[in-house]
Image 1 (cartoon, rainbow, N blue to C red):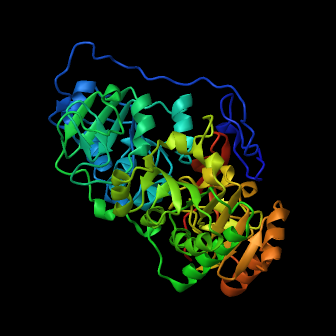
Image 2 (spheres, helix red, strand yellow):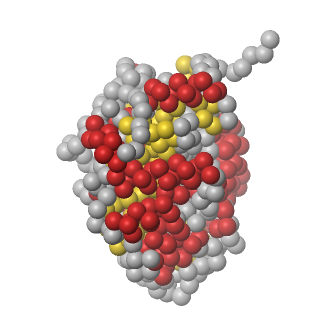
Length: 519
């Protein structure tokens, strides 16, 4: 069965509770029942919730085969906790059929790939898959299809019961003995702990994993002791120097800086660029670089940003320190400077990922965005974007908040080079759709700008500002002239991953790649 982005979805994946994607507003106003955890009250006073080890916590809870455990990835490539906990469950306790529901998975969790291959981990639900985990899932080694959701789609799935968390292991930079926890105040601060808020409220058990115990009360906490069952003190939760990954770097590349400047020029030409406008950038190099070029336009037109939201970097914090941004609403930090800024700045606020982007809430911040600037692995001539699979079909990316901000914002700008190496970024058909084309408005490349035909108003703005733009077909043909047309990938019938739209419908599937046979 084909959905509205013309992707074939096997009917075996559909049922009473699962539908194909039918447009970004399809679920608007539909009634749903919220899930609830199976909670155990502490009526009798408990002096301390601290236990001696992860193993002791697991034994106290009574872990069993088939459980779903959750983690967050605020430490990004420096995270130790996900692998640490999973190793105890598998190697010390022999637990099987585990489902890992993580906000994202990357190279820091490569050990989990071994447990997938050995059959201990049989389910993955995440907003990102990189490293060895992506390779083993793409090879068909996970027992069930991985489920890939956006950052907003994940708390929606938790709230509706699509994924029920048995135990949430929440990494914290600091905690007290009752479980009041936060991403600051410790040895390895990471800033916002916004990813942990929803999991801690909906999980049957919530365990804080930290390397710093502060005196009670550990204020101002993100996760409240009222939602916490146990606390575990470990030697180190991770290496916070690895938070700023290559995906979240600030670029110095002249080509990327040129694209970033063009994005800022487009924003400045828009009628939305006025006092109190709202803004977000993605984690890609040119996306983050837009901040520096936006400043001159803001000063020239004497406008200030009402709020910035999302994953936050030093660049947007610097704009606030200069008096150009009213409020910052922070789900995660892309660098340590942003985390420090959150701790010290009154108008820099921590929010949950549900507040940020959950389409089933009644006031997600993404719905109030004027502009969002995002990157892409691929974009096709229908403006569909792929940020999850490489040109080889292997899982190596993350939707993150990409689909959420694109759907909610008034103007979504994709910035990406026309080619990467010998691969065309602008193409006829993306390998996997992660953000539907009707959510994308403008494409900025190093060879030109294209506007979605659905947005004739934007074409008019650009014309009035003297900003040249072309049909996206022109950019595609230019890309093909430089690197050639891509060869068609060959797939087996086995579905290795399901890409959910943010509303829970099925947007696309990833199939197992046929092995290359050499003559």
